[in-house]
Image 1 (tube, rainbow, N blue to C red):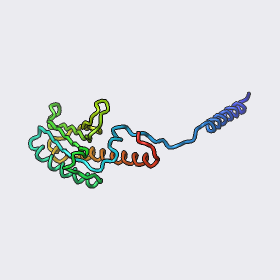
Image 2 (image 1 turned 90 degrees about the vertical axis):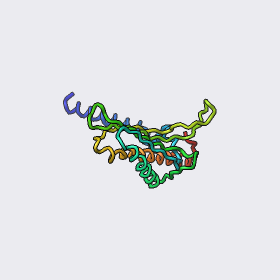
Image 3 (image 1 turned 135 degrees about the horizontal axis):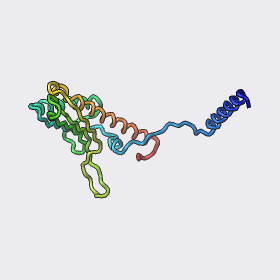
Length: 186
């Protein structure tokens, strides 16, 4: 076998393998990913109760942050299409908790932990009763220079609330598509 014959043989073998792989391949179909149960639990939420809690070792931050954040989150939720209700005990609760403390390791820094969750009444079949549980939760940590903590404490919380609202939209949309196809949600 000379070099030309060997090269032609390799090219022929390569083309044959590609053709066989192409014929054998299944058609490419879009894949529908199943949503996780915690995201599915957010489907259909249109109104929420809301509670903002700030616990801080930075003097005066709690008094400043709670009313400011409460007002701001009401506006954000309204703008994103969710109604904030105070008098409906059946509405899911959006809890926004921020805990800050001065860092002992980094002088002049304030550590903040954000916990944003949706709690709802859920039936626990094993217990045979309804209990109020967090069904979706996001936790985030952040370090701030102490001089800027008052002006920036709410920004990560805004991002987390927007994240949860986006998940509500995804779950609601997936649930609606599932119902249109006539399939029961899994």
